[in-house]
Length: 225
Ligand code: HEC
Image (cartoon, rainbow, N blue to C red):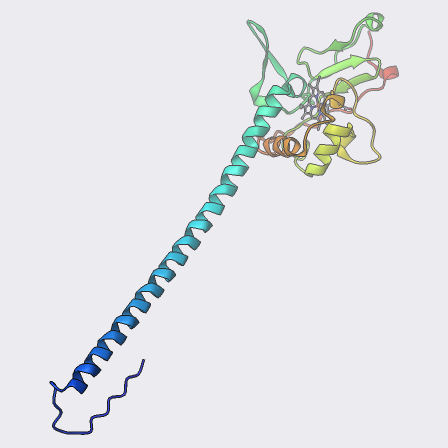
């Protein structure tokens, strides 16, 4: 704002109505200017505040949602019984308990398959003592390593996990063999994408365990006495 003051007379009279009028004009302008300035400053502070607040909010939301995704995944993996086969057992006073040192790492590669009495096989399906190996008309199957190690599902994409779980495809790839019993993938056909994501996020968050699970054994090669 520029105010040009032209003083025509050296002997300027400060009481003159012209000066008072001018002085009043000056005060009004100053007030308007200050008001504008205050309003602008307030607007700037408010916008900056809102911006910082929204930034903080969005970071918080992402953190919480990743955390709750993993928690939801843990809940699903637990209640859906994946541990029943994928975690080896220890035997306590009340029977089988999860061996948490080998959590979700599948059948331990260093434990050989015991010989099977095939004479009972027309009436029975067998499980080994860790509940990680099953023997039936399909042969011998070994529960897979679901931990985020390279020998587990560490290099898998979520799409692979989804295909394995819902379509029963080995390694979650097209043109691979169907997953063998007792993997109950048929039961998982209707799991929602959100739940698949949560389970995958959780499985990727557990301790990676190096354990290369053996390949299945076909029915005619079942080790017998
Ligand atoms: C009753 C036993 C059992 C239960 C319960 C079970 N699985 Fe399995 N699962 C298996 C067996 C055995 C295999 C290996 C099948 C094969 O080799 O064809 C397997 C294979 C898999 C595979 C494929 C691994 C690969 O290398 O292709 C995935 C993924 C899998 N299970 C995830 C799960 C999840 C997640 C759950 C829980 C929601 C679950 N399983 C529950 C027994 C089970």
